[in-house]
Image (cartoon, rainbow, N blue to C red; front, top):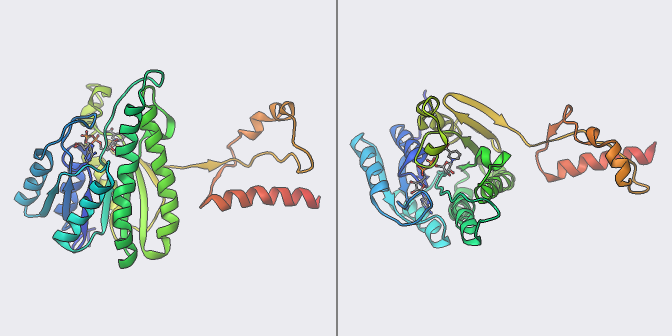
Length: 305
Ligand code: NAI
């Protein structure tokens, strides 16, 4: 049977436009009851309005689906709680949370004000924190949850003029990795996507040739899989756009062991820096202890020899 979300309740933050709209429409088309949240402001996150969320809710209803709008900002704790409460009040549960709401305030780091930096952290990072924490206890209690974080290539690799955005987006990966561990035994998976799609936020960075290929629906396909009961994998970051899907990993190289008797000099490290940075035998770690344990195994091996 095709993947579906019958009897599931999904919340899509920033669901009034772009990627969020596409996610909401698809989940609803396969049976999920939707809370379409959107603040309805501009790209920077300023202003507010009800039409963005309302229009997507209307689209879902016209197509025969079930949805309710919410206009709160994810950036406040009260907003995050109210968004999840809307799902509980209207539909009695929350199974799927797509943390998608996002703003963008570009500026060189030199010129960036702390207000600009915080305004972006507040939406992307704290927005996901507020909504996920509000849903978390319910997911723990029902022993089921699907949480998706929306990270970004800019966060994973950096972007000029995007220090605030990048910092927020990589922080979501740290959040995900810890929630993976806390949700693992209670049926909750947490995954992330690093999307590319032509939307209001990204259109200035797109050219005429590739832009039209980057349809949000291509991103939605992987979100729909990660949000499904059928998919039980957790902690993956999937890069996606225009029909391309690949896993992005955080890996650690085999490293160089200098012995635990005395610290190597900076000159010793300089001589072996290429080997220290060699990723040819790199591997991922399931958690921080795994990485530390590997390092300690080297130390113990050194003590024995
Ligand atoms: P978009 O600007 O079309 O949609 C973002 C939506 O979030 C808007 O409808 C906006 O009103 C809403 N929003 C903003 N602040 C909010 C708040 N405080 N509370 C509730 N809603 C709020 O942009 P797009 O591209 O659809 O972005 C969706 C997500 O995907 C964002 O997290 C973005 O950072 C991320 N992303 C997008 C990429 C792309 O190529 N379009 C690339 C990488 C990441």
